Image 1 (cartoon, helix red, strand yellow):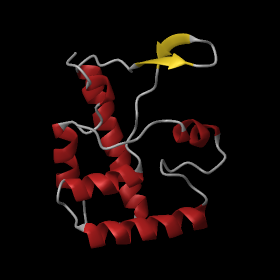
Image 2 (spheres, helix red, strand yellow):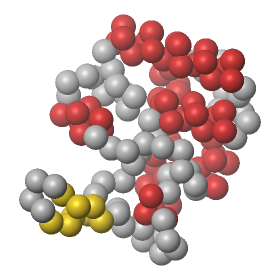
Image 3 (cartoon, helix red, strand yellow):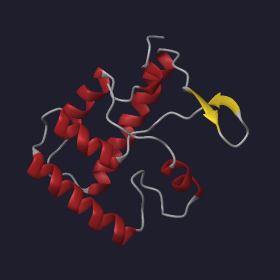
Image 4 (tube, helix red, strand yellow):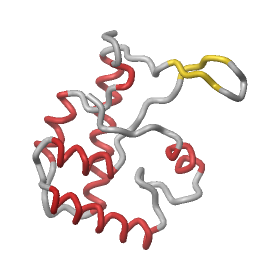
Length: 132
């Protein structure tokens, strides 16, 4: 596996899928459907390329273990839209404002989980960045 690939989230195929499937006036529910589709594609890419999660150092048990893969959150998807030129800064700001209002009213996190759910807590500890 090429160096750093275990940390890669935004493979070229994922960027292309985002460009093809993004609809400017989609609802947040539809945006979550796209994020799920992106995650399915990302998992398939990782499986096809036999990419393993990175090795991390656990400060609790003082041993090295396989970490977890990052996932595409709804906010990561918004930033990818801006980075890929699919939306501009004002559209990004609008998406983030609408998301914040929606997440507060619905009590969900950036992965679509109800806040306080076991999966939600787990997802909060996953690194999410727009890398390579």
